[in-house]
Length: 291
Image (tube, rainbow, N blue to C red):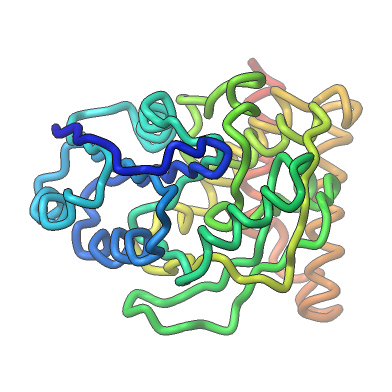
């Protein structure tokens, strides 16, 4: 664990704090760190919270520690807990987190700081996010969000492109940190919390701010558990907006089939019910019904 003197400009209105939670991803972490430090941002506070990795992670961190404001490597309670630990240490007025396998584009932080300065009433900035493969090759998939589509989030489990979302620290001071008990849908739950509390969210769908690495060991590839947890989030926090429990399930499945029709055509739309996403919906709502 090492705490060094910050070389950040005292202009707190421009200070930005980025947290990287890490565990056993030393083979990706160096690229992530370089993508942050190569921003050459004088207002950057960079914090890495590692969960006690035993691979090459610590060697990588120590290699770049002169540019890291704070880092720690110790057992934690998961990704949400690690990010929250970092945010408690942070001093920036703008914050976000970048997972240890994702990357920023070269001008990302300057763009974000300039945008918040230009639009001081803005609470959240949402840019676009492009996927890359395990070797860093750009894929065709680019997530561009033009608006906060509550129906899509609730009924089809869509979410904002987390690596490209930046927000004022005052939001978590008002509405709370990430839920430590969530391991897949903590970003969706947090962003919904902001939205229901009328945060001013600006969408910039034509500006790619980050690269999300898509690989076989990626936690979010476990679609069953991630969608089951998102069903829990929807039920626990937003049931008042949805109506009855089984009606919610029906709406989710209907919306899922509607998108399947749009993307894959009539035959695929009615083939293979329930698919993996629908199984996770049914599993969660069945558990809730019998508890």
